[in-house]
Length: 279
Length: 74
Length: 174
Image (cartoon, rainbow over all chains, first blue to last red):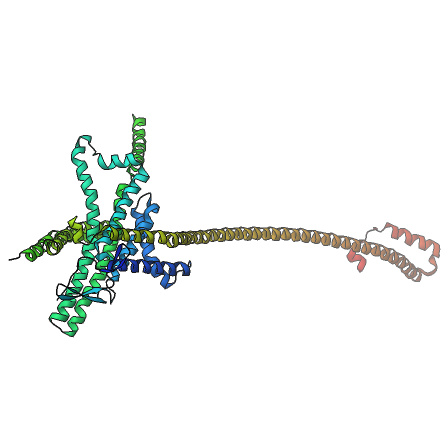
């Protein structure tokens, strides 16, 4: 029987903390990221080798997009965005490795045997995604306050443009800020968890229900490659949404509008000058 | 008779309609833009991904509701 | 929070995940992003510098070629001028030489003419004395003793003195 576990299963107790298999997945993902980083840094040369390009590419590509879309202060939060992207990407893809989710110990729950895998992709656990969403939440609030000041941030966030709309708009603002937290965490969790369930279902259907060897080989393979794409896209979405929230929270409209006004003034005076001369 | 699985299925299935249409519209717009101006692919990419993510989030909400119905409401 | 309990969320696990990510972020920032950013900046700088170098080299080359061109033109002009000067000098000296030669030749001709004149004069006077002797002898033979030598000689001398001093060249020759 197909068994789907929405919670991360506990593996063992370490002091007051229960170590779950998604924690193992998260640690594994961070270790992989760090290994890649160390390999990269040690071998780093100015003329990239193929291996170096492979590691460098996601960093540089994400950094370029952050640079293009991040506005004035992009350098202050680019490491966060890139780190989120790489970490979530690896956390998603760990679930696609053979053995993850299938190697574990069996446990008897409610009368039938249940496999508890040693490693669970970290992003299929709400703890992980909620943690990242909290980091991103506090990052955009913190950066908004640091770049604009507390009062400017509060005014920017809670006071509506026509002041009399404030009582109506402020609750909406608060809810929308909180809904970012919920949507960020549940989007990633839902996608990866649903992907895991989908893979398990396909494997279950093609092996346990009807067993035809080519079917059992190719159908999960197709969904595996789909999950590869989805894992990438979801990592991208998480990173870019964090970036978009930060860009929205960091005030830089003031200078822009001002400079645009200045430009407009210049243009208008310049255009009216000949008219005045003619008159 | 326990109707919870039916409720979960309906939540997911009906909840997938809107995001499906929304993502379709987003992709349509992006492809139109790309067809008109292929050089703008870099500028389109991020808003496109973000828009799809926002549309898809609604589908994820219904997935969460379905999961809640199956795992919690019993 | 039954909602979060359903998903297995508790403070410890959440805290562990946040801690894990922040640690990763710190380590990455420390060991990856700073070197990588520095390296990417350096690469970009080097690329820009390389482009700039190439540009400046091209500019230098252009300048050098312009200078070479200029030098060449100058040299050509100078050579032209030198040739012209030399030609002029040669012309001048040729003229001078020719004039000198002409003058020399004229001088030589004049000297020769003088000599000829003198020779002619001498020959003339010799001839005159010979003719006088001859005429005397002939006259002596003709008239024999009618006259003595002194009178005849005087007569002939008188006759000869009446003759024009300048004898035409054709007559003198014959």
